[in-house]
Length: 265
Image 1: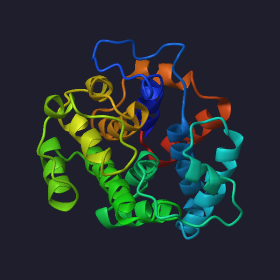
Image 2 (image 1 turned 45 degrees about the vertical axis):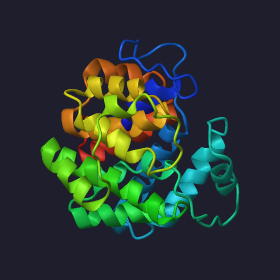
Image 3 (image 1 turned 90 degrees about the horizontal axis):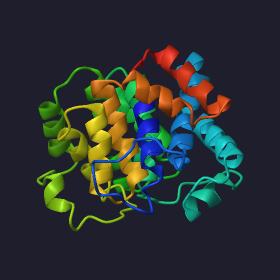
Image 4 (image 1 turned 135 degrees about the vertical axis):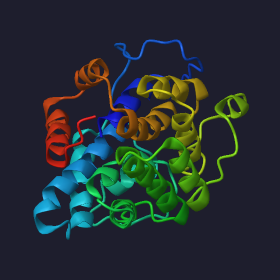
């Protein structure tokens, strides 16, 4: 689970100033957590809160906790429509296909014990805001990739599953890199983040390739990092560096989630 948080923090300083190289320091004093981390951990907390009643109130808990944390960490870079959603009483979905649907969903891939459960949980925590078909698809593809990665499925099989069910991934990162630019949509982000993972040979290489691609670096990092973390695990030193950027409130959420769902990666 922490892979998404690592990717967000590493990518934070490059979101508006792409590095487009693989040779950079992963962590500097310019790094910080963004809305990707806050909303990912809000979904983690929603699962923890509703676990005792078999997630029957997952959607309402997700809304309540996303709003609670979103208002607490109000200085994060939320999109204008999502910020309005965070600050509205009884918020409604707004037909979004933004990549915020995919960057926050990775916990679903750890909680679900079958593909069907992962799909259901992904839909539940996504459609409360991002109910456009492309938003739902991007979130589901991410959650399914996390689930398959953590259950030991090979990268080739994961890629085939994504191609058969979600996106045609018929490009390499080097081929698209010269023309790839900031993309705020799921369809402009998720398949590219997944290809970053498919081309990688380690967790750290996944992060470096995500930054090398450019674009929405923190969200690319969060999505690719979530899948890579589930597949490779997260090296101890990288995990320890990441935790230094989180306050005690956010650290407690991720630690409780990892203990509860045994996702020590």
